[in-house]
Amino acid sequence: MSRNLLEYGKHLPGQLLVEGSNDFHVLCSLFQKRKIPKNVFGIKEKGSYEELRDGLDIELDVEHVETIGIIVDTDTNLDSRWRDIHTLLVSLKYTEIPDSPLPQGCILSGRKRLGVWLMPNNETTGILENFVAHLVPDPETNPLWLHAKRVVADLPNELQKFPKARSAKAEMYTWLAWQKDPGIPMGRAIMERYLDPDSPLADPFIDWIKRLFQLP
Image (cartoon, rainbow, N blue to C red; front, side, top):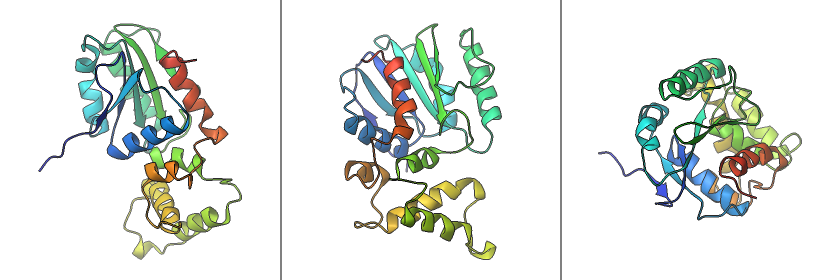
């Protein structure tokens, strides 16, 4: 049975499209902690990258929406994902599309003002959890975080059920399992500040959001 996809904020001039429910909850919490206004853009879960990509043309036709942002994982191949996005944007009549993703995030003019952010940082392959790892307090020296990463890395091959491309997810959920409230979801972990929403490593993403939706 299919579930209802998540949506926050309706009939606003801006719309942020994300792949899944984890993206949705993480961003809702991050924006709340970063004091991003709630009356400028909504957030809509599309269900998957393919559904986001294939439905963008329809989203661009929504009359009251003036600005759209899309946030997608690069998974295992940044260049391949960007080529797919580039082809999509050309088909939607956008021009002056950069050949490679921009570190600061892409913002285009055309049918609607349109922004693209490739998780985690427009420069490396990865998924949402690679971005969220930047919110771990002192990730380079945090002993519990480093231990969680070692545990995942040292897992014997015969016990590893997940693909290597999802190692960041395994690391994050291992670390969350060892918190005061074990297994707390990432969005709540931001609200409870197990994850640091004020990490400077998230600043480039927040700056892109502010530029895209023309926030002060």
